[in-house]
Image (cartoon, rainbow, N blue to C red):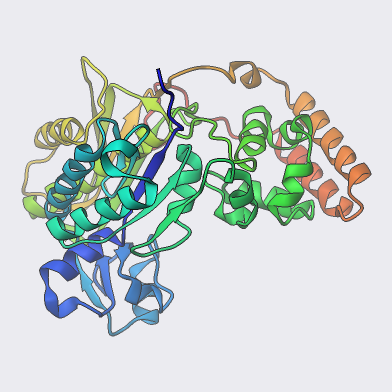
Length: 413
């Protein structure tokens, strides 16, 4: 039987919420559109058009700051039902190209295109066909990254946006990754980047030279192994990794105390999308959904429900959340804040379980050993900063705050 080289597409819908608004409102096209809270309201930017990004506006920015940067922008509240409808339409197109589509958020998916060349042609032709079909059907553009694994495909899709296409040929994974900045690496957060910067490690080429064990000593067993693989263009299973937190939650504070059921339900729908995306991205599973309400008088309460089966779809999550809302809210009292979260989140495996029982002294010893190894190998290593890094970890260790237990409220209450 003939074997096929693996081929994955990572598809990202360009500035999705803002793009839907520009599609549905022709007068918005070519203008900066900011989706989220409106000026004068409490809240943040959910997403914004590329025209707005030129002013420095970006997702998760406080809307007050966005308004200072872009006072002439068009500010609109999210219309989650419209975005969900457009997403569903586009995901349906993806399923016409492959039986294996992994939707990881409302505007993002992986498509397994392995073995489809006989039907859709080589990667570039297939990707162009996909892009055209999406645009012809929905009026929206997508960006595609193509590679032999999901990790590289995802980073390739971020390489050329919007309406872009980047194909990494088999064998070219590490060369492509090495051309990126450390900040471009998927799944590498600010704390890890700061650790590397404190050691004067500033490019991916330097990381590739660091031995596996040294990376594990420096970044922890799982973090070091993850780094060792991704800088070589190896997919460590970016959607099959251990869940590091035992709860996943998100909250929204209304710009003004809200008693409009439609607005509250739409907000709940947005929150459901967000926590389902995070659950899938972290490879987690949960049966327990928690709703949090803070009323106008600042009284705060939570209610939870344990489902008979794992909650894996936005629809299930939203349905349960609505039931909880009806139980907890009288539909008359103004709501100041609403939150939604998963409690008792479990992982698909426990491959780092032994690390949980490692003593603080052992961790410090491994970190110090890693620094000394790096200093021996690289003259450019800033050893004083490295020592400060280790000393700060030592000072923090005695009073280190422990992660919440598996049955604790995901909102930390």
